[in-house]
Every structure is written in structure tokens, then in C-alpha cells.
Image (tube, rainbow, N blue to C red; front, side):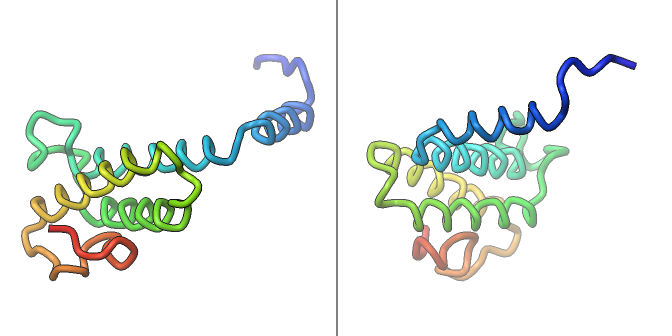
Length: 120
């Protein structure tokens, strides 16, 4: 067993203090990038053949894309120069989802489209 050099409470407090020093726009942007990356993984886009990716899970991708759309829509006014690339990334995974789906959703019913409007 590895000896603990500092109490767990101290390390947790340090983590909270560090997070408190991070500007909110950076926290929001990091969360959006994480959701975007996770959605792309669940769509299989990191693999040479997305259709046969072992990570492909459209149900999980739908959830991640919807969460991403909600975050970007709710925080759009604060994103500044980060807004356009994040919105482009969101639309890319929304389109990839639509192309991957065996039975495409009706326009406006796809993942996140209740927040963004229809994506074609």
C-alpha cells in the first residue's frame, strides 16, 4: 500500500480552490469540448470504419449531443469567440448522427434539435 502524504481533505480542498480560480467561460468550454469529444467517440468517428466501431452507441451519442446542445444554447451569450467553433462542432455531430441512424429522426426531432432547431 502506498502511504498517503497528505490528508484527503486537504487535496479535495486544493482541487476546489483550483477550480475556483478557473474563469467560468473556460469551465463551460471544457465541458462542451468533453461532451463533443464523447459524442464523436460514441458515433464511432474516431475509428477508420465508424459503422463497425466497437465504441459506436447511438443511444449514448443522442444523450451526449442533446446535453451539448443544451449547454451551448444556454451559455451562448457568454462563449464569445468560442461560440462559433462549438456550434460548428455541435452541428457536425448532429449531422453525423443523422447519417448514422438507420431510421433518421424527423427534422427538429434529432438529438439536441429541440434546442438548436432542425439540422439538415
